[in-house]
Length: 135
Image (cartoon, rainbow, N blue to C red; front, side, top):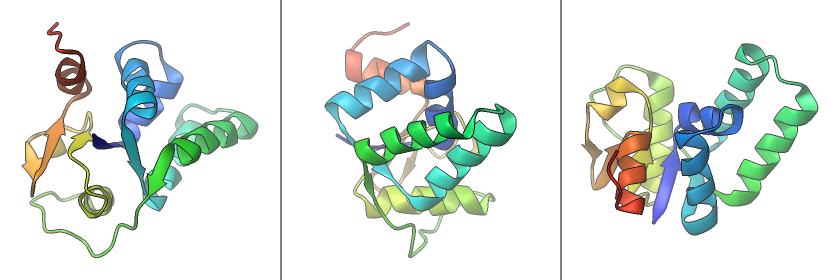
């Protein structure tokens, strides 16, 4: 499957153990990860500013994401009923990249359930989809 993992999922996947780390591993190992420039910028900002991570470690994480992912442009923008402009850019990249799934912890995006033909999942919902396990 072609999948875009939102910034919050990527950051959690690289800063914690557990579900998001499992999702990141599964996607990078068994699926096609879609990335975009804004996603990388946001990930760098959150890791550097919120988590105060060493720049060399941030660079290594971004290198891993870049190597695993297929870069897609965010433009032209798709029409969505959400307010956050950055989210619209990232959703647009997912659509242009032919993503089947968009995985996020963002409640506003999760409320959409789908954008065009792309389904929106929480990390838990996505994990249940790919493993066939609930709970």
